[in-house]
Structure formats: structure tokens, C-alpha cells
Amino acid sequence: MGPKDGDWFPVEVPEVPGVFTQGRDLVEVENMAREAVALMTDTPIEEIAIRIEDHRYQIA
Image (cartoon, rainbow, N blue to C red; front, side):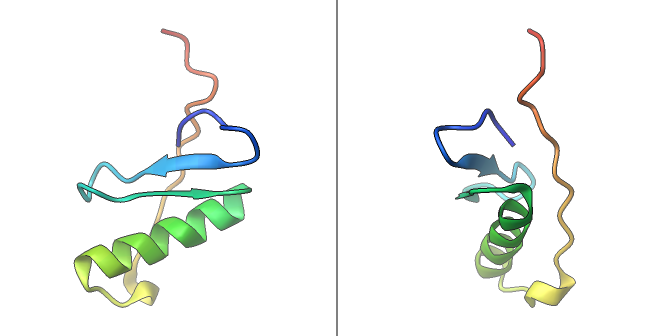
């Protein structure tokens, strides 16, 4: 997960190229990411597990 952009948290799923989404909070982020991965991989959503990594405070 990248820095918060306004009222949204932008999300990228590097394990599945092309999966980008966003959510207003961490619960919504997880749900949106699971849905996006399920759609892109044609996998039932209940089989998708997501681990959220918050990168807002990484120091370069």
C-alpha cells in the first residue's frame, strides 16, 4: 500500500500484474484488493488471502 492520497489509500498487488485499486480505510483496502485479485485471476474471492503492507512511513 502506498501513501494516502487525499481520502483514499492507493493499492497495488505486485504478485498479480495489473491489479491496482483503492480504499478509504484498511478494511476497505483489503476487500477491494481481494475482489480485484479474484476478478483478474478468475479465482473465487473466498480463496483469496491478502496481506496489507503499509509503506507510508518508509524512509528512502
